[in-house]
Image (cartoon, rainbow, N blue to C red; front, side, top):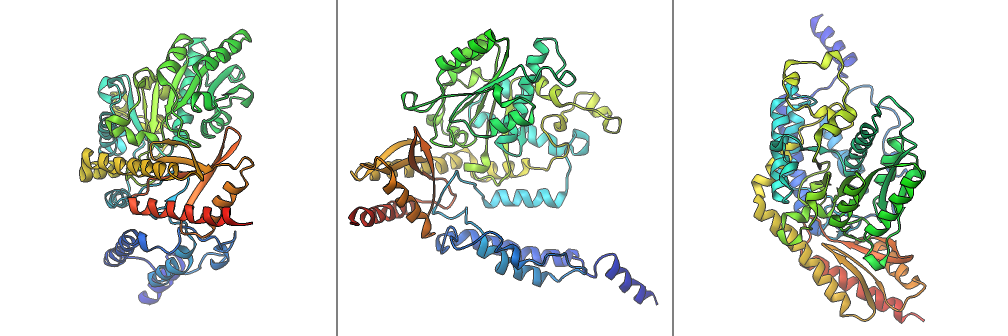
Length: 498
């Protein structure tokens, strides 16, 4: 009777299946082997992108309803091969040059694995002291690695760093902090008084990532108060401080409250670098919060020769190691000069979260970002830095920048191509003598249609350009040279056609 009751319980309550520790070890080893094989064989990946897939092709392979009873792991494992793998884009391919890179590395994967296994929830110091303190130290490590000013370190007592999910979240919380500080300057509580949002104005160039617009929407700032300042070839598509000054003066005359300017090092479209020093001077003059988003290019700051001046004038700064520094997604690092404004702009303290450690001054990261809960993401930062060392990360970045320089030289040496710009490891180009850009568009379509390489495009100064973003962990010089050879081969075909 007891055996029958146990079987009934397993079927009804536990679905008849579970995974014990021994099975987890066995299946875990199998999955680690699968991941290692996948990443180590990226050069043999047939296609970077499957151009034959249509929307809902994957959904058709998955039952529309969940299983009533549990399934054996072997069946689940088989579906990885048949459903998932044929239908993914191979972001880790050495021939992936689209968007910006999304790095992975073995030490970082192990960090994420340990984070999942430990199951820590680090909303407050008391809920996981190791999580909180390792994160504080890692943000200080990375601040030193990219030579941020001392006031951004936790040891300063005024500023500090925190892991956010993405640069979009970093931009959002800094706008909330800037909004809070502006309201406080006008003796208004931004958490209570709704009249502040129609007065707040945010500034950025028209090359800035769309996340700033979205942050304004979420923060309740009308888009009519978001100033997209035109940037063109006269400033290499960087934000013009003179135009910024003019826009601020016009808003002040209209009775509005200039609040924050968001600058960028390495814009998404073309890798433009805003003049941080001059922008900070304008921001300081009008008491604006100055945030710099270096989501992509910030990784290059581990190399002294790739750094920019003006970081000391910023109120906040972020970059994404998950793009180009061998750390798995998601991991965006944000530093603020004035952590009080950031914390107070979002702080809510219900009774059930009160504790002596918090009251004594321990860091509680729940008040530094949007979610209450947070994972142990500092582990992967710790593992990566200790495995590669600063010198190893510098070598990695320099290799990709050198590859971009070689691409630039190879294309410049061919009169059929026009290199529009190179910024860090991002190269922008098109076919020359193509005023209507029809041929450049055909080149772009053909290089991607084959699936062997994946590039993206943008429109710069009203003209179509192709982007080649070098940064996959497996990309070597031979891969970028093969891509250039393919581009030239396609150009032969296009230009020889009647």
